[in-house]
Length: 274
Image 1 (tube, rainbow, N blue to C red):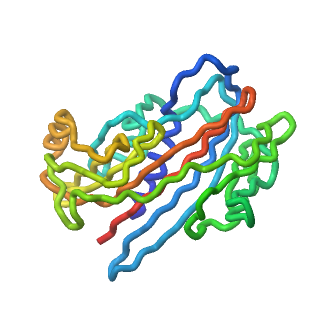
Image 2: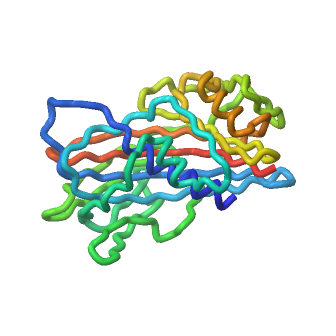
């Protein structure tokens, strides 16, 4: 479980590097990333643990554009390969990026559905680094139509009020069925695709007997199968059949204010432990 959690957090971070091009707006010199992550963990005995977290960071950049979904791709690795290295390879990263220069965005940052706050993000400083996190580490399931209000700070990130979080419903999987083995020829299918360019579906599974884990990014169009080249890679690593251990969907929405860009990302994962 710990290994899976580390990998998922790295994957979430990796999604923010996929970007689209635009030359009609001023060059971006300030970027903000707001995320809401919801995880549903299926426990033995039919119990479910439902946890959500919200956070944000703001920093200087030298040009950036609105986030989009990551192109379809897959990776496979052994447990000793390291989650961070594997996720970096999947997202296309070639080197560890230099830590960005943090920006102040004011304090606090309320997240709400138009009334009482669902969460209040408080500014946290660690030397010159600034981040924002909810005072409550884990939150209940988020209500619909959430927005965030960023008060802004002089010389930092500008004010942006009422910026909406994208809606991201849990995947309704139709194949493979619960308990059905995942093989090289498995066709994954879900009945509620968004078909949005900003949405990405993430599939993760293991062949525990042969110590092989796979992670795939897929377009949110309702179906996915392992590409032929990746089937060969799975074979090379010893994959025979496994189980789907985590499925999720992420969606992003971007906002501009002068030379500032704000990306708001929502993810919802189901983690299967049985």
